[in-house]
View 1 (cartoon, rainbow, N blue to C red):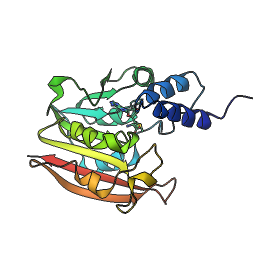
View 2: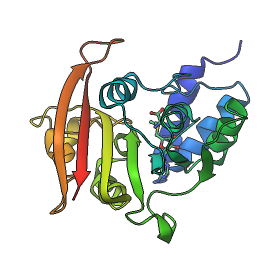
View 3: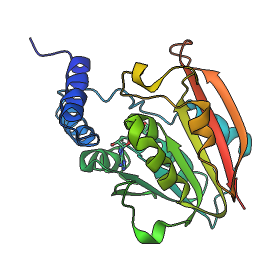
View 4: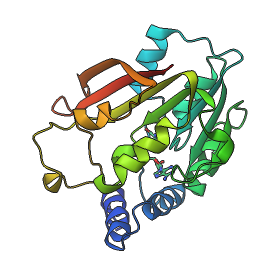
Length: 224
Ligand SMILES: C[S@@+](CC[C@H](N)C(=O)[O-])C[C@H]1O[C@@H](n2cnc3c(N)ncnc32)[C@H](O)[C@@H]1O
């Protein structure tokens, strides 16, 4: 009998984290999933509901504007963003995720490419009118999150919007008690996506439809 794909997914993550390789498991997981040997637990086959809600409420017009989807995975969120008219780029550290994004959306106008949030192309610095970050920071160990958050914020252009969607953690739950991945974000972590010229303009918390005990943040920021 073949192994349960969920078990395989968890083992792939654990092996990489135990080797002190906090991002290597993403490629291993997407590659195994492409071969049918694992499932990618967050791959919904559609855009995230909270991103869809934001798009429906804000009705952004992306004509003549640029958007960047961080840790874009197999592309479903980037497809929603490109449909609003943004010149959209989705990037991921995993080459197999990007290959799957190309396969899933062969006629897409979005650009999918391999890049590392910790070492992005220099010309991405404060370059995007809309930056969408869903579940990438929380997929990284807590010690790496402050740097990852800083990297995300440095992608937002003057006048640009940052949208962050993440699982929520109560502030009184200590780091040591969180057995990630994922490592959900505290309110303090969500507030730390700000800076002197990058302001938190809306913060919502809502239960996950799949499991109401899991709370998610939807945070919107605006750069002066
Ligand atoms: C939990 S998944 C979320 C994927 C997607 N945003 C979603 O919500 O379906 C985290 C994603 O971030 C990517 N990732 C992790 N570390 C990264 C890094 N340093 N640079 C770029 N992508 C990264 C992973 O490969 C993975 O696709």
